[in-house]
Length: 235
Image 1 (cartoon, helix red, strand yellow):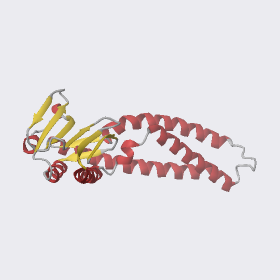
Image 2 (tube, rainbow, N blue to C red):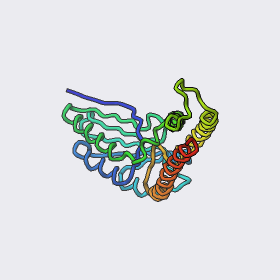
Image 3 (cartoon, rainbow, N blue to C red):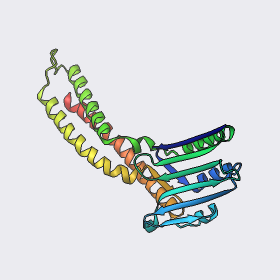
């Protein structure tokens, strides 16, 4: 019985040389030959007849890889595999394979395992919507102010909002809007959906990793400081 799967997935990933080697080595059980095709920043398509040839590509900034396609060929023409990775915000991974049920199940498990291993630590930040961050931050500040005012006796039983709470709430809303706009820009640069850490791209990824870590640490320090300052000011 023939079984197949064709699906577009949305998942942050970092594709390294070890990932390509693992995919090809394990797929060699069913496929004798692989072809690779990349689209670069210079809008040119480049084809490689082997993984070794692909890994020799320098991937400089001017030719930064934008998409990568892997095709596997078997003696059985009805058994196939096709994987494509790109940097789109949605459906940035496309997988397609077909074969006998036992073979397809094994390929499916292999692909799922490798995709899970390629997911970076900042996957949540790469997918989170700026609007969600804005409303979440605003709600956190609002609840903090409300609770602090209740304990301080500044909020009446009827729940009337004092001037301090109103001013800080408006300021928080403005800050949230600005933060969401900035976050959208930074997200694409610092927390990309797709990274091809191949050739020189591996160093670029490593350099940005330092920036990513610093941004996350700074964000949590700033958020914690804001909450503490709000509590002190409200009390």
